[in-house]
Length: 144
Image 1 (spheres, rainbow, N blue to C red):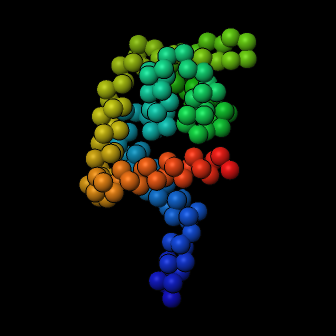
Image 2: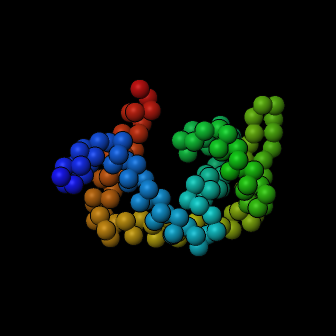
């Protein structure tokens, strides 16, 4: 009976996607703990480093987060001295600080450790395929 419940749940994209999200989030938080921030904060900082002057609106779109969530993240990173922001009219633009720039290598190492960790478990090819399929599915579902 328990197998039937598992099989029923495992046939549901909602259930399996959330289950996967919980597992990969835990792994990500463990790997990024060495950087002193969650993966989401690190990804936001990475975008600011790679695209100085990126707008808060662009950050929200790239991170697939609500603008209010991005605003809170930006304020936290400003408070930590890792980014700065400038306002021009209704737009807010984000720039890395020197201290933020100095995090780039450590963030890259954490990202690589996470990738290597799940690749060891899933296999590199399977992990890459799953990532590609999840990204495509997310785009399609977002567009509908």
